[in-house]
Image (cartoon, rainbow, N blue to C red; front, side):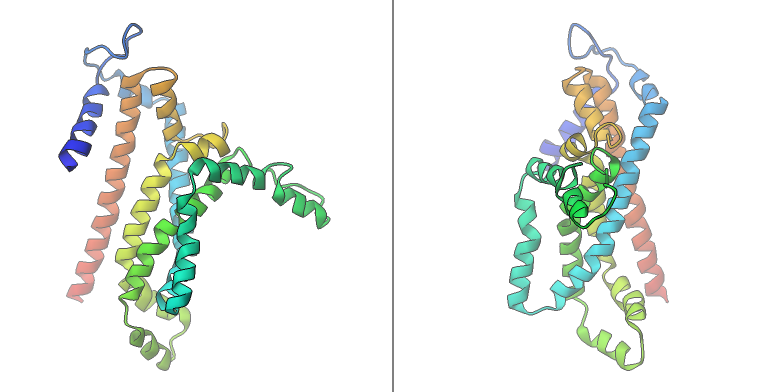
Length: 267
């Protein structure tokens, strides 16, 4: 399954990224490295940097917001868990396009946020729409369930008696989190972080509708190069760069997690 539906298409994109763009056809089977050399242009480097920054910020914010929510879900009653999970998962059932238009209605210059501020007598307006900050807000809302569910699963496996023993010994909530919850829930954090980062750096619809020129990301450029400029070889080279970034992030995060676990095991 992986070979047929992931390996072969990915290999096809990799080969296509070394072909030459053709005005008569989508590509010409003449091998070249010009597509990758073109990515070294300042515009594309800035685009990659913005994509990585937004993805990293969205992942960190989702982790900060997801831990308290995941802890509550892991320790609450069955009835509360059913309601909370429904509220958490329900946004995932809504199309990303619908969610983006919802944020436009909230963050627009005459949107709900600025209307509410004006009614409270605030003399200025928050002009967030069509910037990378609007994209970041929408991504956090979109990805929070993706981070929370793996964390909840990891925290559920941590015995409550470990926290109770720490509290009886005088540990503060911060120490309990740092010495017990964080190390033991690290697999959930790694899984959620990888999922959040991977989705955040590859989105297309959210930055296209909310980001404007300032919030443009690598996925938008790949889409435009493939379907507007019809430069499939260059679009493939950008896609391969995105894939390599994802693989590098997985290797770094998983490798770091394994080294920490091995050091903890030897200790």
